[in-house]
Image (cartoon, rainbow, N blue to C red):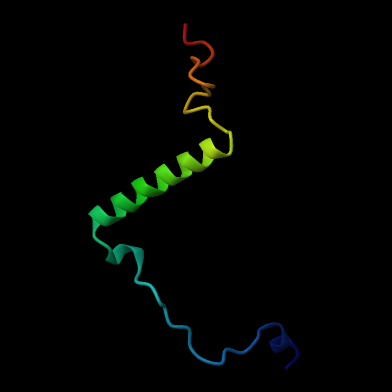
Length: 66
């Protein structure tokens, strides 16, 4: 059985500890998506990335916006 050496044996079956994403109500999924978006936005600002959606920098207009 030389081919079985690459896969370690499982000592017990793996039990899912969290419910599937689809089991949460849609409202909760939307709320989580919104909160994650806010978190990412704050992390980018804290890292100094700034830029907004169109590459603005420190309140300046993006290039080519007249």
